[in-house]
Structure formats: structure tokens, C-alpha cells
Image (cartoon, rainbow, N blue to C red; front, side, top):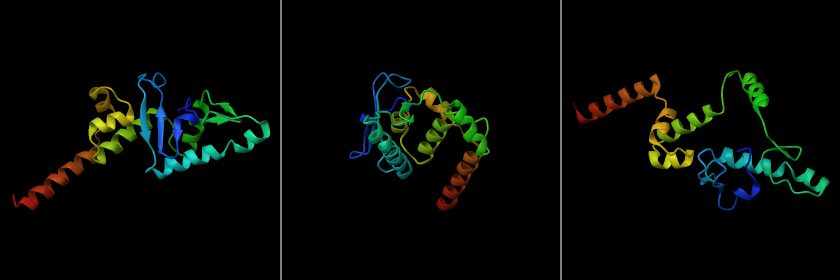
Amino acid sequence: MLSLDWRQVDFKAGTVTLDVGRTKSKAGRVFPFADLPELSELLRMRKADPEPLERKTATIIPAVFHRKGKRIARFEGAWRTAFKAAGCPGRIPHDFRRTAVRNLVRAGIPEQTAMRLTGHKTRSVFDRYDIVTETDLRAAASKLARQRFAAGA
């Protein structure tokens, strides 16, 4: 996301376009954000953020994520500080990708669609991100019990 430019964000369509060759898999993709209020708000806040600096310096800041107009190159220090302050030290950026996969699967999104959204090319890698927890096992057993009860078994 550090390489994301405003030309890739279409507020009218509610999409972010990730360019071919700029993602880990080198595949481009489109991510719709219009129905995700938190992401929409974040992008709108980021868009408003550089306006005073752009006016002051008479320049256009193309980067969505920047510090004082310069594209952010590294964020590890800020990441560690933020997660320590949140009481979650030791988290890594891929934890968000795992959470996204889990949320998509638990929401009933077809796995091929979820894989497209997350950029996973292979089922095996996607499955590694879809971590099954004890809570998931309990929910499955409960669902089975409800289904059996409803069927009168």
C-alpha cells in the first residue's frame, strides 16, 4: 500500500486499482471499497490531509501515504509503537491479511472471490491464512446441533 497513488483511487466508482507489477504476486486487481465505511473514511481523510501542504508548496502529492509530502518508505518503527500502545506487541502486517481472509470466509464470501480480493493465487496459501480456531470448531458443532435438532434427529 505504500506505493499507492491517488490516480489508483476512484472515489466515484469506489475502487482502488492495484497496478500490474506493483503487488507481491505482480498481478493487478481492483478492490471495491464503497461499501466499507471505515476504509472510505480513511481514504477521504488521507485525500484531505495534503491539501494545505499542496497549496503552500504549489505541488501535487501523488502518494496516498506520505509524511510531509514524501512517500513513506518504511513504517516498522511506527508499527511497533502503535501496536505496543494498543496492547498488542508482536503483531505483523500479515496479521491483517489473515484477519481479512478469516472475515471474508466467515461472512460466507465464496472462496474464489475472497482469493481475488486478497490477491491469493493458490488455494494452499489462502488456506494457510484461513486459520481455524477453537471458537470456529465450537461454532461448527453448535450449528450441527441446531440443524440436527431442527430436523428432529
